[in-house]
Length: 319
Length: 313
Ligand SMILES: Nc1ncnc2c1ncn2[C@@H]1O[C@H](COP(=O)(O)OP(=O)(O)O)[C@@H](O)[C@H]1O
Ligand SMILES: [Mg+2]
Image 1: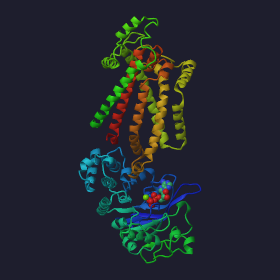
Image 2: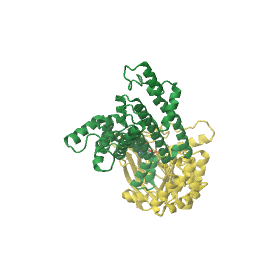
Image 3: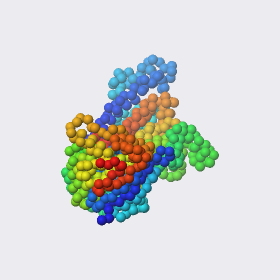
Image 4: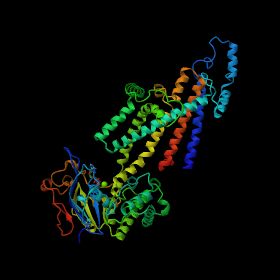
């Protein structure tokens, strides 16, 4: 089957001059229609930048390389007008902070309606009816009244539901979710995860779900891609990666999680800090923090390979 | 909204009372005897006492204030000592002239300033930004009476295109023979609000466009002009309230500008009242100007509340 999303060798570099920041380096990732992939990694590992690349949301000064195809469309080649038609129509996005991602001086209903009218045309009344319908779909209580709320009048969980309603308003094929539950309370977090999962099945969406929480990834995703310092270091079925992570960094992330679940009051994290992207080591970016490091790791970037015949890992000493 | 409006209107009452007390006290705090201006310096003590009683100056201060306030509320601010005409009428005539000048100057300053500021805010760091910000900077820092004199020298004296002083041939009309008198003072007066509004709008636009929701609008496919409409709606409440405040300042009448151009507004009137020691006129003018300022502020707040949903708490 042809993939819904096909990212090949994506690289994004910010800033010119002596210290450019390679935020994403050689990311290759494909999603089948209806597939959910979690993009997992510490903050600063390039998850959001990868995601935003799919909608070409970077400032003009960013240098973007590689190819991105969504549903057969070459995203990099879209004209400005075609790109605007593509955004929100083929690919939608939801954000970490719905409160910041919505215009504070427009009602929620108006903000959904304008997206509907932008992509599907129709009258104000039709767009509003569509917004009302969507509010029911994401189970916002007293939907009719809520449409006339301003963002400051709604709770974070309700806002994220509204954001999801807006993202789905034009029947997209792909949903990009950038840590949509990170800013929410634990109970609300679960509700939103379940909602995303449910709507994903209902609409047959392909979803890239960015998170730094492996528990969240396990909840929503079929597959997971672990990012470190702008590269994918491990990728595979979520169950495989959780059961037997191959990359030492993925193992570290899991261990941190296990220690937390074990009731310790201290989160055991991976020793050391993520590298400065503007000053990456020549070999494996994880080498300075890695217990299994060897000479080869310090000189050569390990390529993604499939040592076990399933999934992929970029490590000279997997297991 | 109604509750907010009611609360805001009630808050005006104590301010208005305070202002009236200060205005009333002005006569008694000003150095010199209020009667000195009308009585010959060698007037007998008897005559002075008689005049004192006539003007009510022999009563206790609170009583004087009460009587003065009641009359003021009925629109009676006394007679001008210099002309003998009612102060209210003098102020009303002057206020209309000032209002015309301030209104035109504010609209002009807002239109030019908001446009410059918007362009600069969108194109931060480019030459467009530097040029427009430079103009705004000049607008705020140039002494405007000096600018007024320069304009007079260039356009009245040298080119002889526009009149230098006055408000026209008496009466009012939209005819060019009247409007031409408005051009130089209005342009001069507009320079300060222009600069302030340009700088305000520039930084507002810079703040708003840096917010996440602007890129989120792009992410849902909104076109550039549609995104700019959101930016305008976000910037408008603050920009309008700054404009309202500027109008408020200008409605106070610019003594300097109105004097330079002999524009017969309240600033000019105030100037006249001061130099002729016309205390009733001075007192009345200050009272009216202060009240106008209080009301303008109230209007601005209500307008802002109507535009920005977050203000109504
Ligand atoms: N617009 C930008 N300009 C410059 N640097 C950026 C920009 N966006 C992201 N970066 C940098 O790219 C790196 C990766 O960021 P990001 O993808 O947001 O991380 P995360 O994995 O936490 O989502 C960070 O070092 C960040 O500072
Ligand atoms: Mg991020």
